[in-house]
Length: 226
Image 1: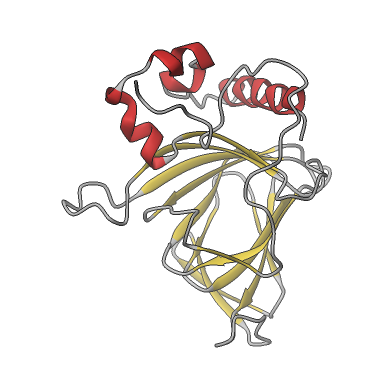
Image 2: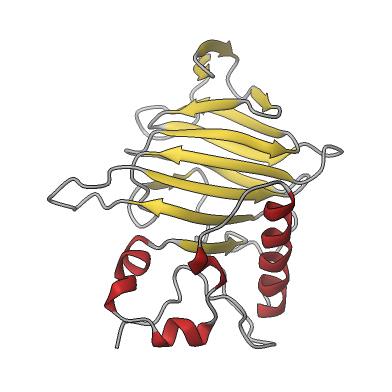
């Protein structure tokens, strides 16, 4: 992806979230200079990879295969004090933009339509060797169990949610014609380094062409505290 694309998508996301009443924390607006000046007081943001995350999953086609996220809070699986064992994200999903099939080994998450668009979530159980199972899927939507066929989908309208449990394959996209979807995630601790299993191998973070100055650093770009 070009840095100019990333800058543009983050600017749009900031405005879109504000228009829909979702307020981001102060560090969402820190410049690269702010990050170079930040000391160890910001180490929780660094170590938990809080903040902006714009990825095309290595596809080179962000508009078709990609996702924009902002991680608001997150714990660590290796935290001995067990102080924060939860995570929260807000995501923008464009019409027809796919997040490819994947599951999590450990994480349980609620995916929530926070107030814009419609999200289509496709589901498969996984087999013991991590392939798609052809068995029906039982999934909880706002506390009500639904049973759908293998590869079937659930559409989340405004305010609706779905609970995704470990080893449950899911792929999602905003329904064409319904506009950009504003999607929340509330989950157990998120660890992108060890807890994601994509059905087809993908790149988690994009290769970036630096065609203009960076306006906001991504969550994997923070400099260490000086």
